[in-house]
Length: 93
Figure 1 (cartoon, rainbow, N blue to C red):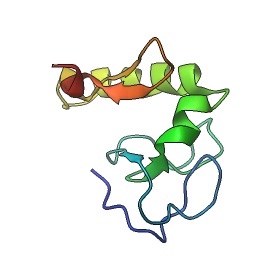
Figure 2 (figure 1 turned 135 degrees about the vertical axis):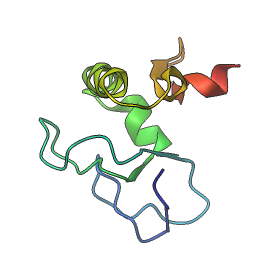
Figure 3 (figure 1 turned 90 degrees about the horizontal axis):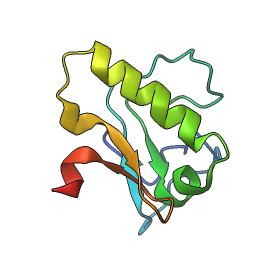
């Protein structure tokens, strides 16, 4: 899982994560050169950016496919809640 610092750049909005901001971290799973513009490899994003991103559902499906093909457990799969918030399966329990 990514080590997030205030200076890390959000792969969606490309602005610094900043302090006191809700973030979601990603493991070193999404290739650096994927079909997504940002670098999601071992990174973190603003939770609000991911939740409202027009490509959110496409990214979640892609990420979950990578999880299924990896040695990570299913608890690493992402889910989109009814309110649009993206969470890891392990947080649903």
